[in-house]
Amino acid sequence: MREAGALARRSSGARIPPLASARADDVQTRIHGEIMDPLKSSLAKAELAAVYIAYVLRYIYPLLLLPFYGRALGPAGYGIVLAGMSLSNTIWRFVSFGFPTVGGRDTVHANSDAERAAILSSHMTGRLLLCIPTALFGLGAVALSPALSAYPMLGAITVLLGLLSSFNLGWYYMSTGRAKKSVLIEVVGFITSLALIFSFVHHPSDLSRVFPLLLISALTQTVIAYGLIRREFSGWFSSIRAGIDLIQRSKVIFIYTGTSVLLISASTYVLSVFAPATEVSAFGVAERLVAAGLSLMGPASQVLMPKVIYLVGVDPAKANQLTRRILGFFLFGSLAAIAVTMLLADWAMPLVFGKDFQHAIPVLKVFVFVLPLSVVNQALGLYFLIPRNRESLLARAGIASAIINILVAIPLASHWGAMGMVAARLIGELTILTTLLYCMIRSGMIGELFATRDSVLALRPSEEG
Image (cartoon, rainbow, N blue to C red):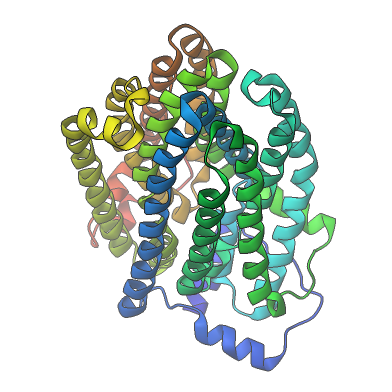
């Protein structure tokens, strides 16, 4: 496994920053014992089960909070909360800058504690370098939104929450085979935030308490996560040069995530600039429900993506087969979700959120068609292109999507509110899918995706498309 990992690193051109000192032998032995062999099916299944237990909690969590917020704060108050969460998630995505994907890939291929410690410290520095410009952008965004600028302290805490969330260590725990610990940390966060929100938020006047309480919960998770691996750091921060090097190696992935996922995260905030809070709440509720469905892919990627990366180096045909199975499974699930939404939305939405959210039903029924498009886009990116170091194709798709999103989102949101933003999201996903398929067909990678063991070597393109 180590030889294959080293070979993959050389072929990808990934560079691991140097380390000042190695860790003690006992720590090294313990960590090596915890790191997962991506081909050992029993461990992979255990890790996958663990992260999906976390997902069940993550899914129950918003299902508890969404109706609670809607009934306690009302449509207008909940619209402000959704706009703040959207801005916070946007800041989180920007400071993360594609680091989790690059860090996970580097960590899977790391041969020693020294390399893993260097990865950790460079990620701390890289994120810190991006915090200052992102914080300034966030404060400017608060001032620009009528909904958030009416509560300046809430807006400032929203920015701080996004910055703190970007230092999440989930990518490191998953890449070193410690999904169970990551699950436990998430459980602590869920319990803390639910207890705080249910205890201190009861009326529309309690709106100003929401984000400070969420910040306390996020801070609790962060302290626990870093405390458990503090001995794995050789130093909290690397050199500035190492941080800049990480940013440079992550920029291609960020072009994709920063122009597609980032715009998706910002959709509710953008709508808050052009539409009243009630429209924001209608779009935001639908967006959160669809996002909960899409997040089903997240736990699987944390376990299966390292396995696909490894298989690409040792058995490409098996990697292709696994990718096709993953794509088929989640695509079927997304189509089933559309059917369930059409059948139950008229009955379930008023029951869960109250009669004040009737206007969100048609928005959800259209928005749910984002699911299959996004599933295909994510599967192609995470399980086929990134493991083969073809991030340039993702970058092209991301740039095309960003340009079209910018051109259509603002006028559509200005004239048609929530439904206009839904149309913009659909157009954006279609743009990404069309661009990816065009680039993959032109470079011959479609043939590689469906290649058998005997033909995979002949079909692999000789140069990057």
